[in-house]
Amino acid sequence: MAKTKLNVVLTRKLPDIVETRMSELFNVRLRYDDSPMSQTELANAMASCDVLIPTITDVIDQSLLARAGSKLRLIANYGAGFDHIDVKTAQQRGILVSNTPGVNSEDTADMAMCLMLAVTRRLREGLREMTTGNWTGWTPTALMGSRLGGKRLGILGMGRVGTAVARRARVFGMQIHYHNRRRVHAGLEEELEATYWESLDQMVARMDVISVNCPHTPATFHLLNARRLKLAKPSVVIVNTSRGEVIDQNALTRMLRERKIAGAGLDVFERGHEINPRIRKLNNVVLLPHIGSATLEGRIEMGEKVMINIKTFEDGHRPPDLVLPSMI
Image (cartoon, rainbow, N blue to C red; front, side, top):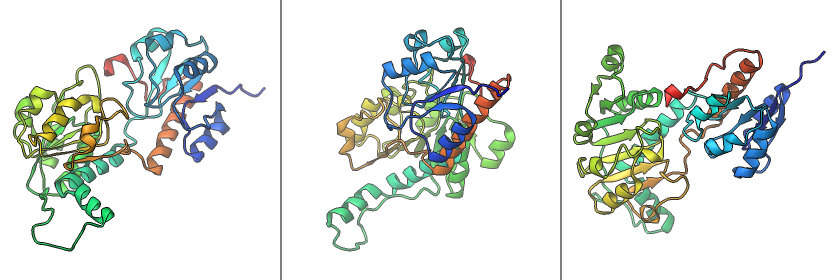
């Protein structure tokens, strides 16, 4: 007798190749409308499926989990970040949560370097001159930026992405500094010639570029708050490809406008797609629509990890990328 397939619901449209393979393995309900589900749609999905595959746009909180049906046994998140899921409540209700760590580290590190270059070399202003037709030709003093070589890079969060950023920055001749919950092993420090700062305040005050690469947790919310941002040099450039909530966006906007911070490259924002309109107008800021991990290869690998987690669960084993409350 054929084994009954798990009922799986996708909350967003995924690459065709991922959806096709999932449809072969499971009884999948696809999301043809590429927009976030409403809370009612999410509740209905969670009441009817064995496995939910959400994304960062789906806030699965305590109240929503209370409406989940008894069938729901696994939330297989399509993405590494899981701050949008109440993992503790899910565990209390007997629902496992998995994610896709490590898949997008290289892509996100590429984007961090892209933003560093874009801000320090004033790409936004250069592109505007070209697209508006205002460029009148080369001059020796036009749009002078600064080089990355020789600059001190402070990495906030030396995990997979932070380490990948450090390796790239070394190639550009940057000096690597970092702050982390735990000091990395000596071999990695030696490879990167990295300096560890136990005090984030002291590191922030000395850096030329700061790259935010830590997850959003209660402990990292507004880690770069107004007080800490004021410690930075006026010439500092801040890049964030991790989570917007790590930086106080209003404080950052104010200091960028006052030129107390030289520039910023942001791929993520504190309130999702709701961005302070004042920061949009600044020439010393490069804004991107959360595309740090947006490569076809990365999206496919994320899907593969999701399927491995579901298949392992289906076979009666612990998903390899299980998220636990202790990880928060």
